[in-house]
Length: 353
Image (tube, rainbow, N blue to C red):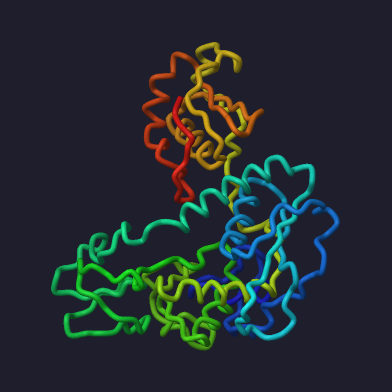
């Protein structure tokens, strides 16, 4: 089923678009109709350039993250494409614009997101999990697909969903066969165009052989919005994604679940019952510079109903402060957060106080 307005694809059983609120149709839209005419300049209300990058995955992820934290943003290609979807030798650039009034928070989110993204891209894949079966507990006599996790009898050689080589359960995988997420954003209208383009460029992806005539036929073992490719194809697949994104402009406002602002005072009933005042929260429980580590730490304290206030006057040494009576419990709660943020893989210098 498809939305005639935003062209998003839905599984069978859905009757209404969750974003547009209109009835779905069962006729696949023309993929070219999904492309919009990208404006040459950002709308006037977005009067500050936040970032310009060739990293298309960073661009998409940062747009969604800004919107989740209520930062208004607009994204477009710096020089929008006007021809076909062919992959050229020059990677396109993308821009994100924001209202100047939100520049301080937006810059903090940008810098933290870029830090986490860089750390994640530099992960040594040789040190990552390189065996199949640990999560699925497949027997040694079974074969598995690294992209869709489908399990096959020992006589099989290729995955019927993806067309890729199968490996024995718990067999060490060659580095090039490791699965990497190419796309997993709340932008369902792009999925069809990206899947079609990957097929045209003969780049295998999870359940790629099941995608026919604009529909993903059969049951996928992964998220309906996630596209996974092999490490050996990852760079080429990113080029395909970048070329598609040239034809879109983004002003994310709907379909997102706003995240809690970690800099807002958290004041549960226990604080009122104890007769505390915000200024009584003077014990540093966490300090650091990364916005997402701060967010994870604040979320952990909220989960355990530990009152806190944030001091973000100096973004390089932001702080979460708790009442001295809660200091010991706060340290225990934040012990796991010390290793990194909850949303993006990274190693951070942020620390517990």
